[in-house]
Length: 251
Ligand code: 1GP
Image (cartoon, rainbow, N blue to C red; front, side, top):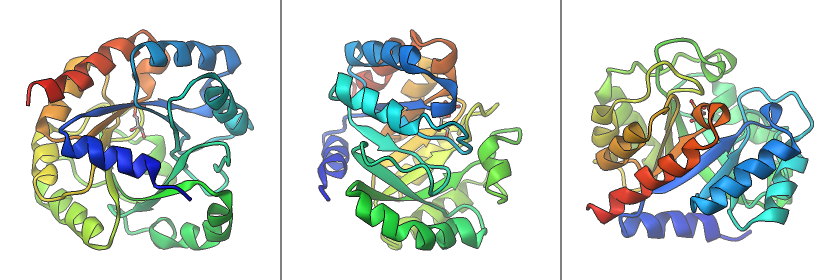
């Protein structure tokens, strides 16, 4: 198992560089759609592809990851909603513990069950404190996780949760308003959480405008993840990437 992805994430953070990840839900694409996304992502210098979803019912995951790996050098990070979303062809896997919820199964149970398969996969494992923040309406992740999302205006709970995740040894904190969230996470919450942790902070869920991605980065996000908005308009990849990458220059 290598440490390449984590090394690049921490190095970019040290250099105040922000990263942009395009989320692909394998249920919502086919070869031609993925090929088009790859072309746009390469041109826009996207930093990562994330592949996965809270509920994946197709068998396209492996093919999707292989197509990306065959076609370009953008690293692929799995963002699994369940232990069956593992592809050995990816570069790394977010080993997510839902630290904002109190569902023991998603805190540790599924991890125990999937540990041997995950270990054998040879993937780089990124232990991630996953915090689902209320995005204004139920999302697939809030329903499937059977756990109450963290209230959007309770910054102090978010701060303590992220601190606890880091002190438990998690290498990344991912705050997610859920795919297609009505309300993205506030800059206020992002900046307060970013100020108390040293590990890279990933932000996603409901980001539909480049300006929001820019403001999230200014507030302290290290990685911005966008899925839904790009599914609807793949040309947004370029504007989102420019917005995210422009932040470092302004530090
Ligand atoms: C969801 O953070 C991701 O888990 C991305 O959300 O699809 O709303 O961009 P969107």
